[in-house]
Amino acid sequence: MRKHRSIPSLVLAAGLIAAATGAALGWGAIAVDDSMDTHPDDVGYGYSAGHNSEAAARSGAIRECKNSGNDSCKIALTYRTCGAYASSQRHYGVGEGSTESQARSAALQSCGSGCKIIVAECE
Image (cartoon, rainbow, N blue to C red; front, side):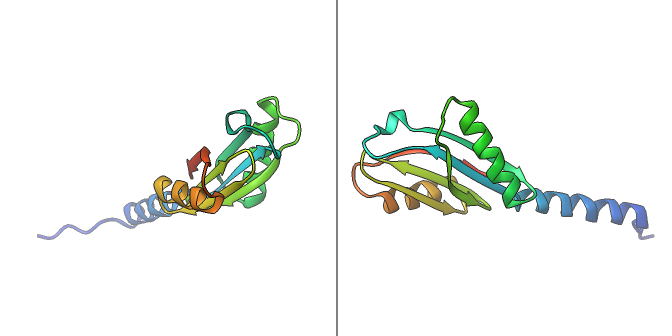
């Protein structure tokens, strides 16, 4: 005899799948306090991930950046999966990717030689 799943079980399973998918598609953002001639080790930053909207991710990243003692925080990147920020004393670059490694590579490529990753995060 074959067992059938009940409607409540199917609804619960569908809800769990939707919740897992929604979390994977949340918003993240990176905010930085960086200026020309700032050594990469001195760049201030904040990041925020797992938000339902781009605006919430952006405000969370700015808040985290300022809470870390930085005065001139600005959004460098918003992303849906993974994002990274790279810097040198003269250049900066941002990158996105489906993995942290891809985001890091894209940020370094965007920044150019002599850059280092300041922050890389996945949603």
